Amino acid sequence: MKVFDDEKDLLMDHEYDGIRELDNHMPVWWLWLFYFTIVWGIGYMVYYYMLGGPTQEELYEQEMAAAAEQYGLEPEGDGSEAEVSDFTWAFLEDQSRIEEGREIYMSNGNLCYTCHGANGEGIVGPNITDDLWIHGCSAEEIASSIIEGYPDRGMIAYGSGARLSDEQVQSLVSYIASIQGTEPANAKAPIDRAVPCSLE
Ligand code: HEC
Image (tube, rainbow, N blue to C red; front, side):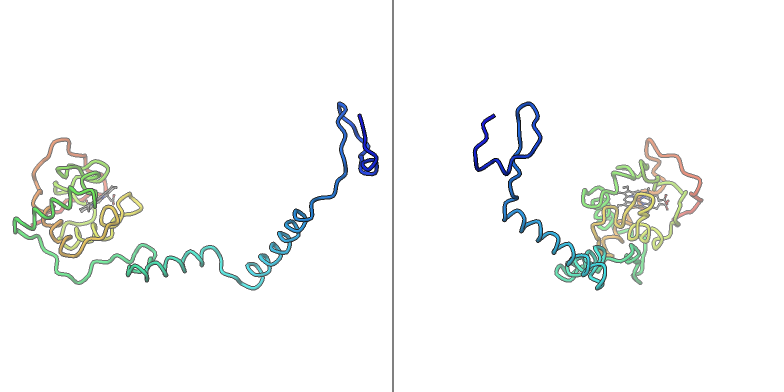
């Protein structure tokens, strides 16, 4: 292998299959980049671990609070922030309200039908046309089921999280009342926790 004069000092003493290596200096720009990462790492450690810089969780919460302010939302809480207000809940007989409730029930905005079935017969969620209820069957209790949901069992607030006004929930509750005892096909069998409860 030909070795140039000015490479003699740099040549390292190993050779594999005729390939030899020169001990060149690292490029200066590369070294500075490397030193910079070390300095940065020390600064990072001191700021975040020793001087009490914000944790990822705190940064997340700050951003969520800022977004809530920017878009005028209720600040995120522990999931218990949705509450049944002191609205007076009732099963309305007004056909236009029942129809509005049915539209919400069947809408892709709130997804009720995807879990409770197009006729309330129950799929993932329970049958809501029979007289067995898990969480009570007063207008207020049904409103509460809708507004708060049962996140640990698969139903989030308002079915999809898309907030409804109290008046809209009122319509939805009235629609549910209107389909009581309709005995839809393919009714889902009640679960053990469901107890008899009659809407009237
Ligand atoms: C992702 C599936 C899902 C969606 C969407 C959903 N639910 Fe539910 N829902 C459930 C499940 C599961 C339960 C049962 C909770 C339990 O086991 O405690 C439930 C419970 C209920 C209850 C209480 C039933 C009882 O027996 O006490 C009502 C009322 C109800 N849902 C209405 C609605 C309405 C109205 C919507 C639309 C706004 C909706 N749900 C959307 C899954 C869903």
